[in-house]
Amino acid sequence: MKGVLFIIDGLGDLPIPAFEGRTPLEAAQTPFLDRLAGRGRFGVIDPIAPGVLPNTHSGAGMLLGMYPGQVSRLNRGPVEAAGLGLQLQEGDVALRANFATLERAGDDWRVVDRRAGRIRHGTAELAEAMAGIGPIDGVSVLFQPTEQHRGVLVLSGPGLDAHVSDTDPGDHGDSNLLKHCRALSPGAERTASLINRYGQRVRETLQDHPVNQQRRQAGLLPANGLLTRGAGHPLALDNLVADHGIRASVVSGCNTVKGLGRLLGFRVIDDARFTADLDTDLDAKVRVTLDELQHAGLVFVHVKAPDICAHDRDPVAKRDLLSRIDQSLGSLVGEPVGIAVAADHTTDSNTGRHTADPVPAFMCAAGSEVGEACVSIKFGETACRNGNLPRVDSHGFLQSFLEMLSGGILPASKR
Image (tube, rainbow, N blue to C red; front, side):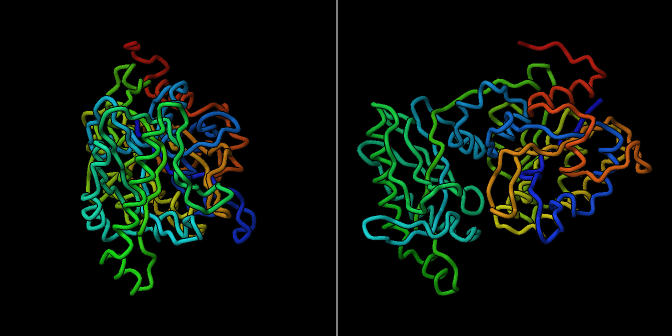
């Protein structure tokens, strides 16, 4: 049996007062998800482990087959670099980078917006201007934008050490001041200094860039600074799916998930119709998924936009988007494939932050027809807390789904 696993980014949520205490998923119109969950096994799962706060790369990595023991060494920078297809060399340091809006605060810089108003246009021009920065002390510096405010920063040269702190204060920080990059090991002082000096040159380069002048005139936030996080050296990941000899593909518009797919050895589908925002073509994702199932045993379909809605504290947009996802997913109902739905983490639309809450999930065997469910449920957090699926982590959920697809007997591991 072949299968499709939908990773709906930030699917889980907390009760919303405007929805009379329901979550966006519980308030959404999801007839197909309801029926599939009722015909299968549904419950809540922990993306990493109970009480552990996940993010996209760790939560999605586990659902894609990464082993739990690798979470602690999975840094965002190398994942983002892989998403762009960059081949890191030994000793390189890669970092996730965000365009941001900064303003002076005495001797410091205040982060007005970590995402520069979710800038979508002009980032290529900004990156081109930044290409003239460096080398710095014999270290080459490469910045490449990915989608919206996101990008990748790669340092290449001798004596680099990725054990450095983030400059991004994050959504959970107790201060909105730009952080000074610090060495977290004795050999990382030079790398931290390089990142700080590069950040200063970026601010000087972008402050009066024509793109930012135009944005200010239009009442938009300028992208006049860069935040960095998740520094790491090149890495290799083991993979539950590949270890069992299963061919898999990834359908996503999110650079992070595409990077995870490439690191795990999956076929990654690049398509301009797939974005990491609300304008992603959901129907096209399903059509491409059906094509991929001609030669893959398992297809992972990732949708980023629900997480963005929650980060923007817009539960109405999240609810409506989940209804759209349900309608697109309905095209798979009745196909000879097993279907599973899960999430990388919960994102609270009240605060705009990730939480450590478990996420709703289900798996359903192939050939489920649209009709009366075996169990009548409204797929969501409340129903899943009382479901028939044991509470496990994402790795255990994927293992169970693979067992369902194989009729209870997985192919022999290649380990």
